[in-house]
Length: 376
Image 1 (cartoon, rainbow, N blue to C red):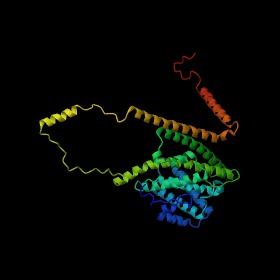
Image 2: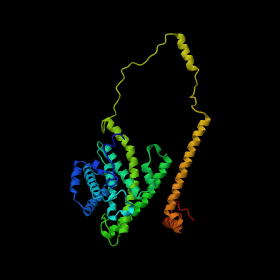
Image 3: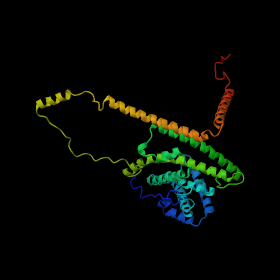
Image 4: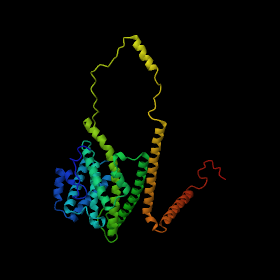
């Protein structure tokens, strides 16, 4: 994208995203306020920011947040990201096990910042903030890929070139698979948040206690990171489709401007006058003796070769999807090492299905829907 490199920068100074390029005067004041904060105080700032982001995402469509609230929240997140980089909480050389549980939550900052920047309501500023959000999402996904947190299908979707776009069927299968994974992660996160609320009294209190140990806290944060990568894959696809429309709007002169109409032509139409009657007769004869249908541009053999190549591509794509599904199933059941786990899961699903069917038959006895009461 032209002019993109001058607006943002990517670097390994903090979490894969150099937030310095995003910071304005107001954000600089907020960053100066956090200049002397330690990790404990920074955790409290993150608590407020994360709680505000959750409230932003759960807001109803008819009641969107104001632009001033979005600007204040983005300024706080940028200041937190700057302070995380100054404290050197993360290193590009460390692995996931090297990151402490107390610091792991700060990996969510670029994802949260991208979500707030992507929710900008001001159409005049939206192209710039949406490009900044793309940088945040991609940097966040790169960090999660490096640490082995992200799902490989989400990373493949984020790194896919526009020239390698999927066909409609493959895109639908990819979205369905991501939705199923996200639904499972959402249920897990909701369960852990509910347990934390029951133990600590506040689901957004980052820390562990007697009934909610460090392993559960780490499991919760890792689930949030994986869910954020899946959401980033969706948001990046939507942003890449929206940016050309926003650029077209800017080229027209801004929001609400009509497209520019070309000025009327001042040239007179080109007219050929034929004075000779014989020449006119010859032109009409040439127009008569022409092929009445459009001639083919390729032979039947060439058309068959094209159809065969398309068929091979579809078969290869289908085989790839089946292989990925097999790998995912193998990873889920540890390649058969969990003896009886898959059979037990199938048996449990069958039991619940039979139980639901029995409940339905109890609530709807035979003949209850027959209004004529002609049941013997």
